[in-house]
Structures are given as structure tokens and as C-alpha cells.
Image 1 (cartoon, one colour):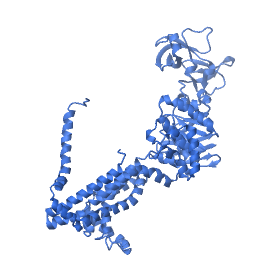
Image 2 (cartoon, one colour):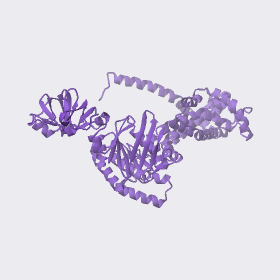
Image 3 (cartoon, chains in turn cyan, purple):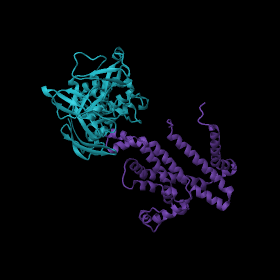
Image 4 (cartoon, helix red, strand yellow):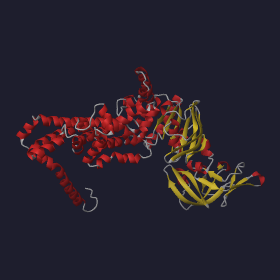
Length: 348
Length: 264
């Protein structure tokens, strides 16, 4: 569907370095990364809005690298929806057909289709500046979809919305995608959003695509410290893997040893997701493979979940539900035990 | 009541006083001139065809200059707002040259290009257009001194148009021409129109460059000068009053047109 080969671009302070990416027909692909990673530039390069230095972009088997934006069949929806302020909602939606010289009958049919799809008939006579964030987004989506693009590019489509509205719109986007079987490329800086929406996700950092995979793959098996940190794997340790007698593998950090699954002997990093760590107030019997103890050095209250840091030479961050936190009577300074399975430790 | 720091009230009072002084300075002379005028003389002036023709000529020539400035200046304004090229800041500086050059000097300089024996003078002369003592001369003098106002304002207008609106239009299928016509231009229109009005008003008030190129046919500012020189203050005043009234009325009408309904 979209096939990007060794794409390089330089736009102001943003650069893309050797991007290789394949997005399948009908796939919802999310590009996620911190601010300044070049995500928007990648979308704009696909849309033909910024000059490409080298590399090639293919769309449905057609090379589009040097085509004008209007020749590409690619629609983009920007973060703040960029509706044309001098046109009514209806004129905004049909803009793409008007400039292509669509007949009155075709335009009316297409408008009906989009309006029903998004439930925005009542908005048609209004001016964009009178719309709420969610309404603007629907109109922008309608304007983008009416031209039946091969790919829909969404640049941070949820970040201009209230946190309350975000989850609902996220669900609507997912539904819309299922219904249309459209190919969507969605850019966000929010890892949770990427996991919730993406069939596959690509993590970008400093103009490079660092890892591409299903949410599960990226979440569980980050390929680098950058991705691990971005995926909020809070516990990342440097060290070496050694093979012990009896086939056991140990990851030695210098401060403590972790029992790990054999098979990743060349790894130099181990990471453990905070939700995979169990906190205990008494040492369990029999002692599990990985058991460490130390005092609680910090607690961050996030409401239903608390982030608890335990100092064991290095520090471990664990997620604890509010109920557990109260049942175990956890507090700063209290001596506790942490344990986790060897299979929860990801090596890279 | 929120008070920002000690002495806010005194500061406001002082600033208001200073502001009032400059306002009076601007408003008092023309107001006094208008209200001290002799109604009988004014009525006589209204029926003086020389005066009426000269005011009409002034308004008309300024309009022609604005049209030329619009056609040549708006595309340049768009280029300056949207693209970067080597020497761009030089071009931006050059646009403001007419504002710093004394206008009599501008008139002399124009003669060196549009005078009968010089290049442009010869070329246009071949098609029967001459710039000395003619409407065309008045128009180019007005154009030279007033076009920076239009270009600057149009450039501001285009710069305020979010470039992503143009990008979205392109992805929706609009060609660069269509994008300009349907998105950039309509969105910058108010600034362009404001700039055009400024340019027109500046053209109407031009004296220095015109007197060098084209003493005749006589535009209103030159007529006022001539009446003052040959017949004295009492005869210059009614023409001046009429000119001020016409200009203010035109300006108010045009501004009302621009900001109709939507005051920013």
C-alpha cells in the first residue's frame, strides 16, 4: 500500500533519516514519538508538502515521490483541524470536489454520504469558528474523506480535544476505520493512544524510525533503551548476561543479579515493566527466583494507580493499585520485597 | 480594583495627558480650518469647475495608481510572505525606499526614467503615453510614493494565513492557482483592501513628486498650493476644506465597507 524506501528529508530544524516503512492496505498504523521526532514531517513528505532529499515513496504500486500533492490521493488532517475560516462547514467539506470540478449531483451524493457517516448534518450551515473541538474534527475528517483518498493522514488528531472527549473520539476513529477499511497513518506523541489505536505502531526518535511492530511487540520487546523509555518501561538496567551451570542465565548489573530466560546472551540491557513487579511485605516461602528487598523511597499518587519506587541499590518502579497500597500499608521508608518472573525480564 | 504597582494611576494620567497633546496637535489644525471657513466662499468654491475637476482628477488618478499597484504589488507581497530566496531582505528593504526618499527627489528620479529622452519615456512615448504634464505622470508619481503601503499590508495579510490551510487545500486536489484564488487570497483580502485604501489615501495627498512631473493638469494639493501662492490664504482655504471633507468622507466610506459586519 504505502511503501517508503530509504527516505531522507530536511525541513527547517526537522530531518528524516533513512526511513523505511511499509503500511498495508486497510491498516491503522500509528507513528509515535516525542516532540521534534519528525513525525509530522514524515506525514507531510507522504502528502508531498515538503521536499524529499532522497529515497522513494510508493502508493498502491505507483511511485509518488515527485508528484504534486493534488496528484497523490492522500488527505491530511492537522492537529487543530485547519478548517477554512472563510467558508461554511458545507463549503469546507465539499472543497475537494469543488476544486476538482465535480458535478452538482455527484457533490450532493458525496456530501450526503459523508454527512451521514459522521452525523454532522446539523453543522452544515455553520461557520467553523462556532464549532467545538470535536465538531471541528468531524468536519475536518469529512472534508478529508469526501475525496476518497487512498490514505488518510492524521496529525495528532486527539491532542486538541479535552481529555474527557479524547477517549470517545478514539473509539469513533477506530469504528470509522473498521467501517471504511481505510488505510490510516496516525501520528501521536502519546504511547497509550498508539497502543489503543494501532494495528501496528512505529516509534520515531530524532528523525529515525526506531522500531516497528504490533503494540504487543513494542510494548513487551522494545529493541532499544529509547523505545523502552518511550514505552514507559521504567526499569532499565545495564549489565551482562552470563551462563551458569545447569543452563541458568544470569543478568549481572554489578549491584544485583537477575535470573533471566536463556537465549539473549549478547544483550546489554534488561528491562522490567513496572506492572510486572509484585510488592510483598513478607518474604515469600519458598523464595522465588528473583527476590530483592529495600525501602520504599518514593510514592507518586496517580489516583487509582500509585507509582512506588523501591531502593535496591538501583531503584525499581512498580505500579500498585490504590487498594493494594492500602491493604499492604505501604508508606515511604517501609522495608519491602519485590519479585518478578524471569519471563517478565526483556533483554536487548 | 487591581492595581499594578504603586503609582499606576499617576502613570496613566501622565500618559493620557501626553496622548491628549498629540491628539490635539493632529486634530486641531484641520478642524479649526474647516470650522473657520466662510460658508459663502465655500459655496462659491463648490461651483468652481476648476476646483471640482481637480478634486475629481486627484481621486481618479489615485485610484488608477492603486489598481496598478494592486496588480503588480499583490503577487510580490505573496512571494515575500511565502518563499525565501537569496536577497529577500534586500527586496524588503527596497520596497520601503519610496518612504524615506524626499518626494521632490522621487519626482526628479522618476524623470530620469520616464522623462521624454529616457528609456521608459521613449518606450511608452512610442505608444503615445507621456509622463510629463499628463495624467500618466500623476499616476506614476502617486504609484511610486504610495505602493509600499499596499505591499506591506498585503504581505502582512498573506503571512497571517496559516500555511497549513494552503497545504490542506493542495492535498484536497487544488492546484497552486486554485489554492491562491480560493484560500490565500480571500483570507488575506481584508489586509489587501486596507492596504489599498491606505495607498489610495496616500496617493490623494501626494504633492512633492507630482509637482515635479506634472504641474498640469492640476491635482487638488497643487491647486491649494497655487491658490495660496497667487491669491493668499483666504482663497486656498475653501479648496483645502473641500479636499479634506471629500477625503475623510471617502476614507470613512471605504473603511466601513472593509469592516462591514466583522470588526476584528
